[in-house]
Length: 76
Image 1 (cartoon, rainbow, N blue to C red):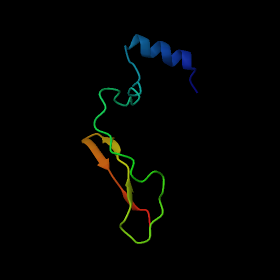
Image 2 (cartoon, rainbow, N blue to C red; image 1 turned 60 degrees about the vertical axis):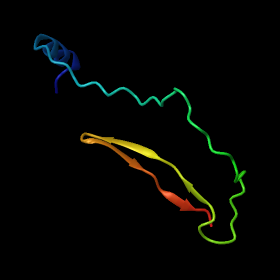
Image 3 (spheres, rainbow, N blue to C red; image 1 turned 45 degrees about the vertical axis):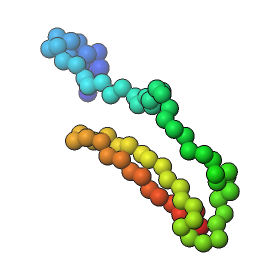
């Protein structure tokens, strides 16, 4: 076992630094686009399939770029 102070001293002498975590995600707080009218008004009941759908968009960041996932859920 090696004391953390010795490791810190040796890293300072060799001018080594550990990787820092990336900055946390901040959602965009700029201009908001057009907002759709609330025609469902929290009434999620349906009488047949494909009448009301819900969705959400998630963004995943990888080394090679970004990927978006948008699942669609039928409310029936």
